[in-house]
Image 1 (cartoon, helix red, strand yellow):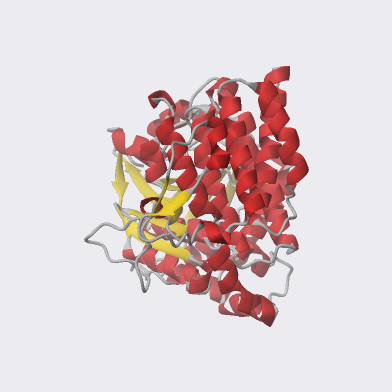
Image 2 (tube, rainbow, N blue to C red):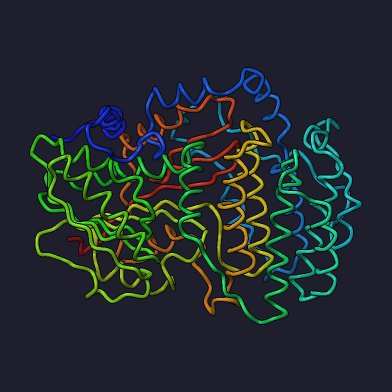
Length: 511
């Protein structure tokens, strides 16, 4: 019979026990356990805990960025705007679906403040704000003057780049790189430092006409795991997807999972454990792992194979060191009678799948029973200024969320910001875009899937919601994370900004 929504997490709790033979350090992998959460809290100095609510109150960078970039969009020509996508990142629950938190999301601050004058180009430094409801100026009063000045100059620089005024952009970037440090106490200064570095790469690439990013995948994967350990976002992606897969595999004897960017395979041991303990017995599991490094894929396959063997579960691993959108269907080892699933945890670290239209075509050809999709609420399409505006708001929120409870000198925070978030910012601004890749990326995959006759949405179940809520309960409410269920999806964000959305889909010709 089908198992309850708490079982994936409960299975993980059972799984984290001493073993006679060395296996993965599950605490470092980031599986949610009471002991891990308690240890994390107990390791925080009392003074840091007492200061975190204060830090959260002071983290208003993303609010101010939202206000200014909204005005920037409004003042640009119509072809450079993408206001629908920008507004879609505000978390809102449908009227008929209750929020699973004590209070509702606060209304967007866009309605609380407005500039007294039109903002264009060099006018940013003359911004004066008024509170429509009474002149409290609660957002800006908590941002230091230097931070506002840096963000203002960064916005001017983005406008210069968007109109190919590279000389002026270079002058401003020299100033920004001298003024902003990634080690600063201020979130605003840290954001500006990384954005300025990415935009400098953009300008240099434009001058030289080349863009050849070198990626150290081991460093990226290490930072990804560190991010998983300190925030709920990756756990949210893993456990909500695992629950949807578990439901799709009910009473299926042979299952095949295609992971479009498997990395270290952090999410799969929990699913393996619950599959191995099914009342009807474990299925045979075939996993196709996609990635760019055969060496890393092979290591991941060995780890997963050893774990499956310990569980007594029949398992095969097939590595493909190519992008999903660049392979032929014959490269996927399909077998009659198996239940096919595709899992895609999207990120902006690098192009993991290749051309979007080819990725979509192969998904249609494969006809999976289930597609689990976790998207960043961030568009990779459109012009440079579109991507700049969206990413500035998105990553300001990400930096705010880390700064709300991690000290400025915390080594994990710097590791995540430098090796993960900066790499994403650089990929979006300096490497991505139609001018670089020759094609425009889909702005929102779930919208594209919904528009196709080949796929139909599978609403995320109450069990998936229970998984997400369990993950969120590991973090104190003061940290500011928010969860919303609606339109068949689950969305996790920080304060009133949606950052990740999980959805599930099935093909009309599903296997």
